[in-house]
Structures are given as C-alpha cells and as structure tokens.
Amino acid sequence: MVAYFQLQPAESDLQNLADDYWQHSADKDRELERAAFEAGEAIRNGDHTLANLEAIVRWKHERAVHYLIASSNEKIRHALSIAAAPTATTEEAVRALMELHGVDLPVASAILAAIFPERYTLLDFHSLEALGHARHDLHFYQEYVDFCRHLAESNIVQPQSGLPGATPLRALDRALSEWSRSHDG
View: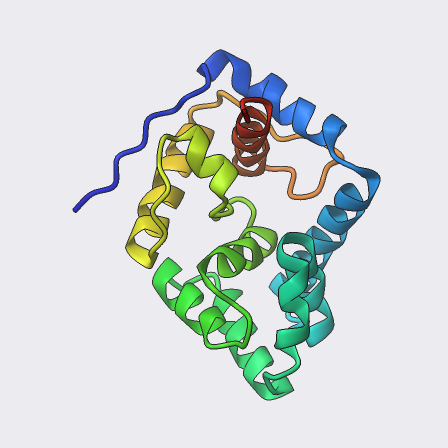
C-alpha cells in the first residue's frame, strides 16, 4: 500500500508559514531547536554521545529523555554511528535508533532530522495533518520523507538562514507545522 499525501495549505503560503512558525515559537522552544541541530551536527561529525542524543530528544520529546540512560554508552555510540553514516538507508538508521530505550519512530525521525536536515524531516502529527494523513510506521515514514524531499526540492520554500537546520526540508516542516497549529479548532 502506498501512502497518499495531499498538501492542505496552498504552496504559495508555505514560506510565510515557515517564517511564522519560528516567530510564534517560544524562546525555550527556539533554544531547544538550536541545541538539537548543534547536537545533530556534532553527531554527524562523529561525536556519538549521550549528551548530543539527549539534546535532540529533549527538543521533541522531553519526557523520553530519562529513558535514554537505560541504553549503554556503547549502544548509543553504535546506534548514532549507524544513523550518522552517509550511506545508511532510512530503514537502517531508524531501526538502529529504535533499539535505544525511549526512541520510537517520531523520536527517531527527530534525531535523523537533526543529524541530516537536508535528508530527513520529522514525523510529526502537525505536519501529517497538513498533508492530510496520520499513519505512523517505517514504510510510511520513508514515503513521507520522499514526499517532503520532493516538495522541498521544488523550491517552494527556501532555507531559513540563521535558523537551526537551515535547509528547505526543515523550512517545509516548519511551514506544515505552522499551518496545522493555525488551523486547530
């Protein structure tokens, strides 16, 4: 079965929505996102530590942070080395991360998005709502990433210079989340 996505906001609104997302975010949320993408860069550069993993998980699912310590440092290093390998497939990276305590598919997607913001995006209910969908499994995530990459590569959103993860894919994620937040209730 192939997932079907239908973009709910107008393409012409996406850049403004991405900008609004950052402006409407609380200072704490902006700080957490900056720290997450700095940690992702450190992981990409070989620093496969609990501290970097914790910074990313705290950004998207703070309640899961305390579960991370149940994974050994060796297990964390191993999972992050697989996830940060440029040749790893989405499936390999996600499966390695999900071997860690407290890491489910949405958390794994956040970790991957922080490590490789040009390749991955978050599996987030706000973004999914903006694409008319809500299913969460690994096959679905791969289709979701492919769909979002295609949108981002079409130049409907631009990297947001000076913001964490300054890629079109991260700007698209901000736009989709902002659209969903602004259409609640």
